[in-house]
Image (tube, rainbow, N blue to C red; front, top):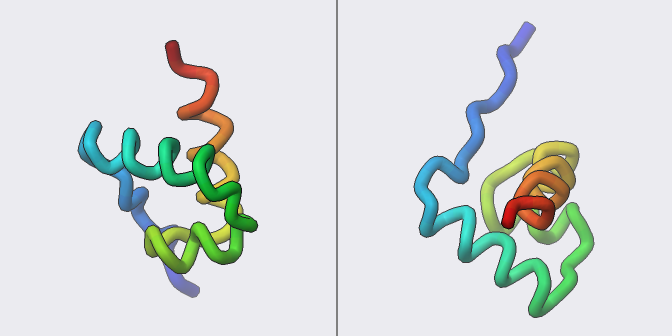
Length: 54
């Protein structure tokens, strides 16, 4: 059984780029996951988490 993948968005710059890219292009989570090397479910969680930060 495999362990869970670690989050790839560790740096603030990576998080900022991810959420700006998401809001600019609105890719489906499958595409965003491929581009950012994240599983589909984790891509959705990052989007929810980062859009609620202010």
